[in-house]
Image 1 (cartoon, helix red, strand yellow):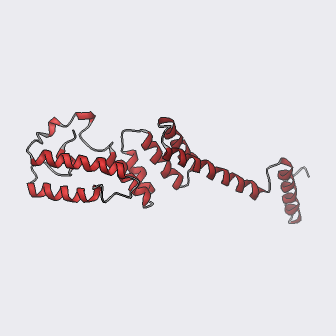
Image 2 (cartoon, one colour):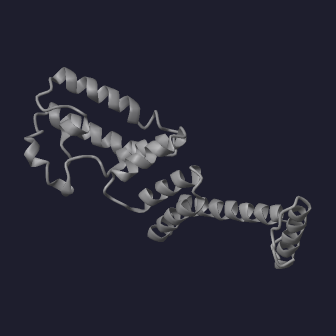
Image 3 (spheres, helix red, strand yellow):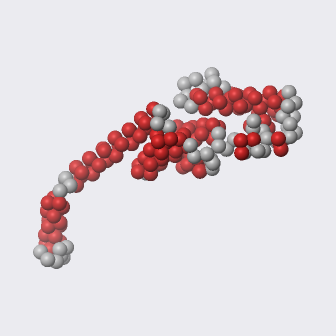
Length: 200
């Protein structure tokens, strides 16, 4: 179990009133009823259970010393858990992609969810290729996740659209078209006293 005081964002030695106040504040934010229509409902529910457990431990006098929590699961902090990923998803929903990337870079566990969220951030910041790599990693790590698969399909569709637009903008992609455009450009340069292609 994680350190109950840390879960509630309190220093050891906090009064019962401080514990109650911190609990109420967090419970309001993560309560399942508040997150009923939230796509992060499962993460919120997991965080709410952790908050409830931490509150009960402190109020029942079972919190023990901080040393008893330090090596549990490798860390006493909540940095790799659902709380951070919940925060990342909130940042994504409000368009704060750079902040989401900053939080993700501080998360030590690079699982499928981490890769997916990093991919979503990069795609939304305009780095389609880099974002696609992260989402592909997420799909490889969790092939049964439809959210990851659907987003990967969206990225592939976006790439196809961009490629088609680029193809149409260039007027096609054949080498004949390219040569024709160069010759026209050379003619324009020569009319103006320059020379783009010296051999013509």
